[in-house]
Length: 413
Ligand SMILES: Cc1cc2nc3c(=O)[nH]c(=O)nc-3n(C[C@H](O)[C@H](O)[C@H](O)COP(=O)(O)OP(=O)(O)OC[C@H]3O[C@@H](n4cnc5c(N)ncnc54)[C@H](O)[C@@H]3O)c2cc1C
Image 1 (cartoon, rainbow, N blue to C red):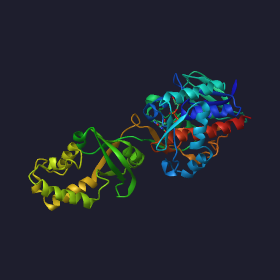
Image 2: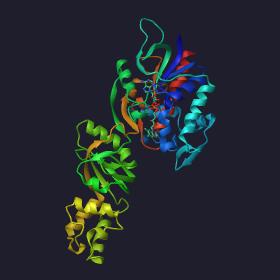
Image 3: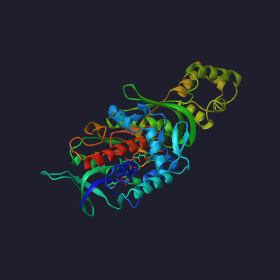
Image 4: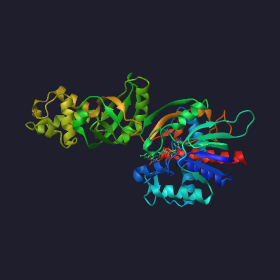
């Protein structure tokens, strides 16, 4: 029997695609390899699901072709997402532009999507692991979709299997292999929105400290690749927290291409270098007989002050009266430009999203249809589109799912 539309993957973009296709009159079957739909969604936004964001600037989305992303978002963006989810029963709650369900529970987003699938008569086959899509040959109509158990036939297929990030939620990168089998080009998928391991062993001593700071990522040639500011999480192996998450996709790509990227950390971003130098000079006079580590208290976290001094080869117990002008300059410079190499970006097990993927030039931005394979659509994280933290990755999943679902329903009509 031939299905109208098969959606592969019951994640964020797959469920949105299936709902939209069904609303527009398509008969839909979803094939999901896990025993339940939307497993990753439960974990989003720390269990609260940050499902979109009021500020839809293009700088919040990354990929080789941003005009593709902009065009797609022009069809379905934040307001459309809020409207669709309200229709499904989700009332929004906004915090600084970030939208969450008012219930405060990601599970209500999954429940709303699943309820909608049922109301619309969408069929869902779980524990169906798809490994191949075979395009029509010799004038045949439709695609074959092969799972470990059987072969399905469908007039249209929407591939919504996600990327490689957080494989514990079912995403192991199967979509890239299927895309390559279909002759599509894939930009090497790499982990993003993740932490990093720093070179050197000083991080061991600063473990479990949170400080406000700025992270600037440079390539070997000294060019600024990305920058962000906020709460840094200093962890035993390196650096975590939103500011590094935001620049991590550039660090991962630089390392992959053999570059040697490094970071400059500014742990007093609200003060200029000159102000920090003046403050240190003042403290040298005011607290002359006190040990350096104590004198830095009130400027920086106690432990971090000690690590900072040690990283300069200075004894934290030294009385500050002994600081030379050069010592003060070096300490001020460390506060503002703490240079550290990146050994590695933490892998897919720790990443929230994938950067890279199926290059979008091969798809139509209005429909997500693959240009060389009419009737085949691709959505979500599988594509070379990644967003910063803040609801942008789910917005991309809803946008691309919506467009694919609408177009597939139009195609079968
Ligand atoms: C911990 C965590 C927190 C996050 N928080 C947020 C957040 O708050 N806001 C935000 O915007 N983004 C967040 N994200 C990112 C966001 O969840 C993803 O970008 C988004 O879910 C991607 O949607 P998708 O449809 O492409 O793939 P997914 O939602 O990953 O779904 C893919 C589905 O396909 C299935 N599948 C895979 N391979 C096969 C196969 N071979 N056969 C059949 N089925 C298959 C999988 O089992 C899965 O159900 C978070 C991610 C993580 C890991």
